[in-house]
Image (cartoon, rainbow, N blue to C red):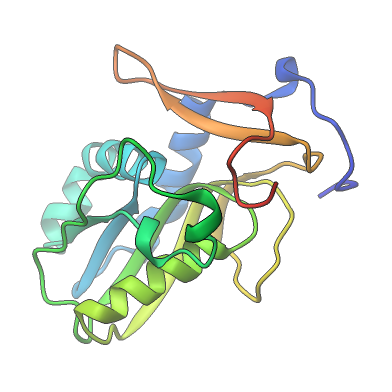
Length: 185
């Protein structure tokens, strides 16, 4: 990763669809029996849905279960961020106890979303292990948490906000905007 104060130009953003294929290739060896995929709303859920299709043979072979988490109430900055308009209930319809959980997120930043997701997962049971995969690690980690697998590493200025969007046709794209209501003001 380069200098954390580097301001990235929107034209320098990688193609989200290409990164998704890279992520799928890196995830495939981790898929085994007693594993479940859990997408973190919203971008992590979009990625998981696409990964379920791209890796359908492995998912079926190993009977991989999946679910979703909305970690809004588990965030340590909930009082500052408040409730987002698009909150959705978490859906974990499988037994988490002793399961190998692979959390899926779109953009890894400070680690606070991941910490919140782990806290919520433990409300469902005690997993055997938790791994994290992310489409992009943008730098800026504040906690001793990091993704085990990423498709790309980017260095962004603290004033920039990188967001995964889902287009009308279901394809994914990256968008760069000024910082707003993200992990850190």
